[in-house]
Amino acid sequence: MEKNLAFTEGLYILAAARMAGERTPQAIVHLLRGRKNNQAIADAALFDLSMLYGLFQQRSPESIQNELNRLVDDGLLAVRSHGERLSVYVSALGDVRLTQLEEEFGYAACLASVSSVFERTRAVRFWQRTALLVQTISQLVYEEPHFYPIVEERGMQQDVKQVLLSHPDRLELSVQVKRELFCWMERLAEWERELLLRRLSGKPRAGWTYAQLAARLDLADGAAALHLIRLAAEQVSVCSPAAFPVLSRFVEAPDDGLSQSARQTKRLLQEGRTVEEIIQLRRLKRGTVEDHIVEIVLADPAFPVSSLVKADKLARIHAFVAETGTRKISDIRRALGEAYSYLDIRLACARLPKQEE
Image 1 (cartoon, rainbow, N blue to C red):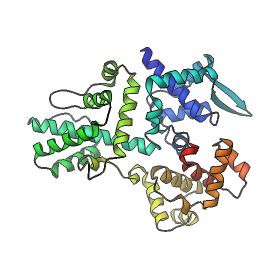
Image 2: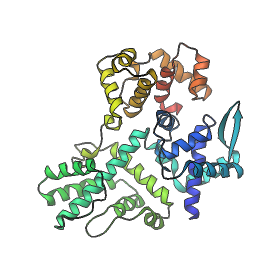
Image 3: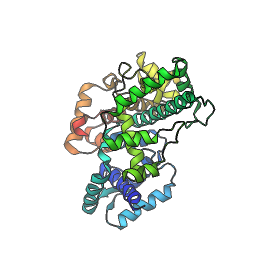
């Protein structure tokens, strides 16, 4: 229990440390609860906190706020007023505590494995499909076709079914999947392999819970879950069809993370339409279309931001962020002037060079 509390405490301090006074305590609440709006999703990417998005979605806003208040009372966090706005910071004591917890739980490696909420979601769904495939093959090899699938979403079940239909020889498919799992796991540490393998379910046994894995591996429950997503994300990044012909079928394309409306906006952008034309054609508010564009850029690292923001503007915004350390959209616009639109700045911040992150 103490380890779980320490892990959670570290997450709060980590979020505040990454935001570095740029956001309110409420922004941390929205991030951890996975609030479904573009500001929370953009903040997750901007501050390299996408791995934490929605981690506490089952908790109430009040309980998270109470935990933040407790950390303020304990001197680990500080809240300062800037006019009518409150900003959250990490105290010197909090910095020391975070360093200790980082050594124990390895937050940094987890956060570095995804750069957007869409990448995190893609990693989770990749693992879910993989686990369902392993369970299904195991049941079929043991000639037990009737079972409760560990993933209930029909779309994922259909994805696994398509793999089965394309491989009628179940034993051959079983061998191929084992080969790909071995190829994935041979480069991992022993505890990472155990985390993945014991989480899988099959005919002989059910997959372990995160609590069981944490006890076995001397982790916090949440750390076991977070590292599993990290391992899945790292695999997604190298899961080519040549090396992983079966598992690579479970890697979603960037468009799969977009809302249906954002997909329509992306299609129009790819056709060469301007923002103004899209607003007129789709009869949407400017803010809605701009939110779509930010969503597209965050979901698809290959999307050409230069088609929307001039190169000199991108360079100037990036230079300003590097010089000042601020990522507050309003502060950047106030300093650079009205020649820089809020969309220019939001897109530039979504594509900050790695050394500035």
